[in-house]
Image (cartoon, rainbow over all chains, first blue to last red; front, side, top):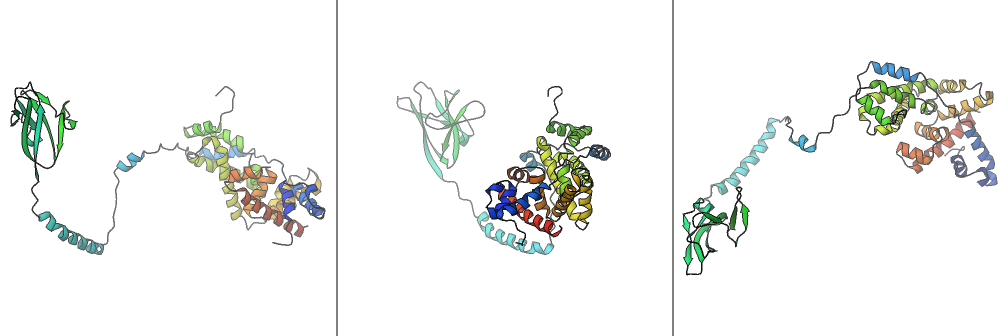
Length: 204
Length: 181
């Protein structure tokens, strides 16, 4: 703030928001002084006809600007091999080795412990096939051997059954009817076997 | 593009980048005078303005691949010229502004009489005593005739901030003109 500050209303006059008539009478003289200031503004155009030739002469000795390369997709940036250099002071390795040794001692007994045998579950497989002459079971638990696990017909109802004891986990299987027709278990979920057939899935 | 139509800035920028550097002359011809007056009032001298505009065009050419919006080449070019003008004032702050203002006023001795020339010279001298920020907002509004809204858009700033700068500029100009008359 100095003794030359214009009144805020006079500044609005200079901004074009007010006219001289809008000012109170006591500010008119200050307003006229302010407007005189603007009449001294030099708005005449400035022309620089020689610039084009000078610019183009300068550019003649410069390399042409190259178009920017298209951006590399994010997945390519991630997959591109790149060199990573690490500078490590040897003494820094000491605590790292100590931590690694402690972890080994902690994990080692667990890895040496005798693995528990997988728990076994007894399962009964059932297929209703009144017209079948023979039915068997082929799956991951018998290496897909169509003759290894035959089912037994119970009475004359056409119900075929087999009871197996299998390790806990997931097994895939199918019934083999009359030695040639592979039938998924209608009571179990199925997945594509990759060769156009469906295998039943049993999770124990 | 229809025959005879002026090519758009974006088309020219893309042509230059595609290997036709001579097309850049179209942009220089198109805009060399548009901001010459801004540069002259910012730097206080038509000669300094000529150097600044020329340098800005050369710098724009070198960095053309970084022009994100080729269709708004002129807005991008203005920012390069503005940086050049600000840098020039920092560099030549020690130089006597009287000489610069003299060169601006010298050409108008025959246009409007000695009194007008003297008032223009006095105001240009006073303008050179402002900070570049203050001088710029005064030049854009009262020389180039832009509104506060247009200036705010061009400089990516707010209208209240511009008005604050401008109102300080009014006070400084009044002080300078009173002291030198």
